[in-house]
Amino acid sequence: QKEVEQNSGPLSVPEGAIASLNCTYSDRVSQSFFWYRQYSGKSPELIMSIYSNGDKEDGRFTAQLNKASQYVSLLIRDSQPSDSATYLCAVNTLSGSARQLTFGSGTQLTVLP
Amino acid sequence: EPEVTQTPSHQVTQMGQEVILRCVPISNHLYFYWYRQILGQKVEFLVSFYNNEISEKSEIFDDQFSVERPDGSNFTLKIRSTKLEDSAMYFCASSVSLAGRGTGELFFGEGSRLTVL
Image (cartoon, rainbow over all chains, first blue to last red):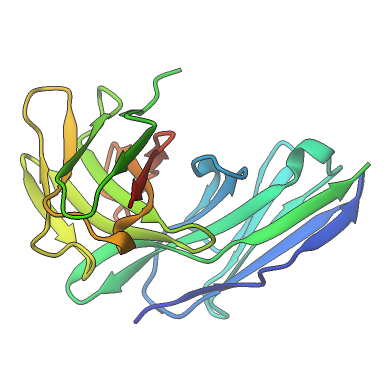
């Protein structure tokens, strides 16, 4: 079973701080990595995708990928209370002969005003 | 902005009854998916669909589940005889390319909450 692991949290940061969310994965041949945000009772919303080692920035969000360490992270700069949500790491993994998008259990982030 | 739409938003059914959940994927997307999320648990893959046939399916997607694209716009998930453990939020998603190959960014609908009594 190919796994995607995240710290469940909760992670609390003050408004304006940097929130750092981490994810590890077990499938060494995974090529595509995604961060989704999920508000309570809502559907996952795509925030970032990353495919190459290094950093990828989009506004206040930076995704970091290290394939050698099988590690992907998401940094949220200038955190806002509206960023309070569960952040899901998703990785394409091989299950049997099928490649599918496998989700971690999510990290609950609370940004304190 | 184009979006995936799902109906119904909430369905309550008796154990053993058949349920059909409906989805309209984003119009230029070619790959369609169903995921489910039991309350408090992970988002789990059920099935992917391309070119009018199932591409991949998980262990969860057993004989009581089926998918269909009955026309050019709708994509449905049928649960033949519901069990209590089928109670979950069911998400439809679509993508331009296959998830895990190339970009394959998935866009999710708002979900259909199924409650089996």
